Amino acid sequence: MNSQEKAEMLEKITEETLEKMTFRDFKINLQVEGGEDGENFFVNIETPESNLLIGQYGITLSALQHILRLLVRRRTEERFKFLVDVNNYLQQKTGSIAEIAVEAAKQAINERKPVVLRPMSAYERRLVHLELSGNENVKTESIGEGENRKVVVRPVGDLEKLENATQ
Figure 1: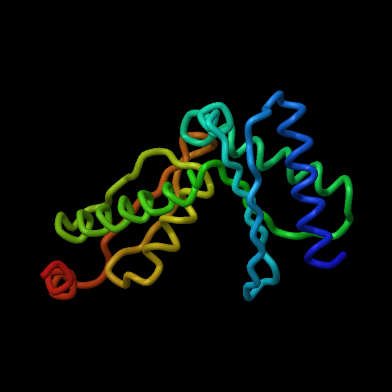
Figure 2 (figure 1 turned 135 degrees about the vertical axis):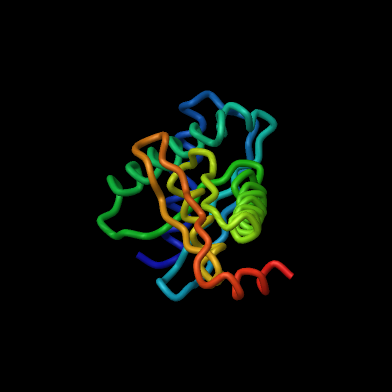
């Protein structure tokens, strides 16, 4: 199945699913980007009823992503990656999660003690880990179980190195 066929199938499944959920006023924007690990498909649903599709802390959006993934797998054996977003919610969230991660790193370095972030979804935790992976003054780890899983940002290295990082 080529890229165009995958995109058409994904768009059709998304449209059918939204219609079955009784959404009528929506527009689907689909983008395909090539990456190191192959093609990535991005589905952004534009709708004035975004709060119903996003839910509290994005939980409904996560469920919609899971359902669409299952429906795609029923139609094709071929695996491909896609991300579903509503009114660019995840894109905006990515920026705010990155800011939270950077601030937590600064706090951990300045106070020389671990900073525990609020419970986050797997996607959000991954964003924090990626954002701070290039910072040699901190290390991150996930702790907790299920919905209470959170990221801990810990300072590392000698004190002189930490003091230079905060200046």
